Image (cartoon, rainbow, N blue to C red):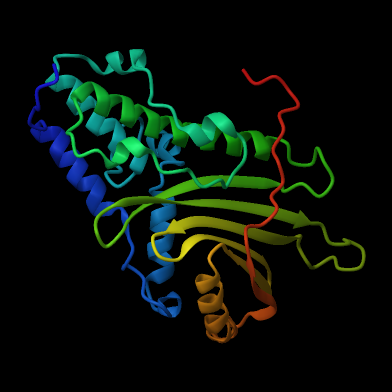
Amino acid sequence: SNATQALPAAAKQALEGLLANMAKADALHPGAGKAEGSAAQVKQWLTDSGAFAESRLLQTGGHQTAPTDFKLALARIITALLASQGQSPEAFNRLTPLASQDLMNAPLQFPKLATANASQSSSEPASVAQTLRMLAGMLNRITVNQLHSQTLTARAGAEPGAPTSTLLLEIPWLTPHQEPRTAQLRMEQYKQERNSKQQPDRAAVSEWRLNLAMDLDHAGPLHFEVAYRHPSVSAHIWATKQSTLRQVNEELPLLRQSLADLGLEVADLECRRGSPQQAETRLEHRLV
């Protein structure tokens, strides 16, 4: 039916809980990175991204005791919508997810900012069937990132210079106008074994690389690449808009001082125009 239907109480409650726990644009103010609790807040956003939903279920014996997990929250909304239609949760398996064009065009290139879907600007209310397809597509994106992370991590050691572990995440957040946006995050760990004869008391050293991509309303697309090997850190920022490039360059001295205040040695810090060159992921084995 195309008639507008009221959102079931259970689905409305699950949706309100999901929105309440999403990251907000004004949650962290400039300079808040050194404030107490800021690191814990960012860690919570990463934990609740949905990438760890299955491990949470394993820890709780299959009970959904993590109300803030994005993937589990989507599942609760879907279950409530299906129940309102008199269908069991198994009916979800027969739904065709709404396709993500960026995943179809470049399924293994990450981060890659998705282009805005024109249908999202429509003021017409979506039917239950359309909403279920959209939610299925959102779950599909999370699952693709989970499988992609597992594939890249499983290759550890297969190629020289390859990371020993890779984690791909999409963090949903809300603008001040309550509009949903997505930040794409790629974290890689590179382990370098120390010479056990020359330094028997020192363990292996890890280098962490962080790649963050997001598209802001006024600043435009931004890419951040950060490399950290204790105690040294370097960061490169790419901005598409000239005005954003100028603004970031003005803020770089403050960023350098903030990193130094944390006890880090800043090796390199710069902002460039455009976007970074990214390594392409290729499947060399059959994917079942």
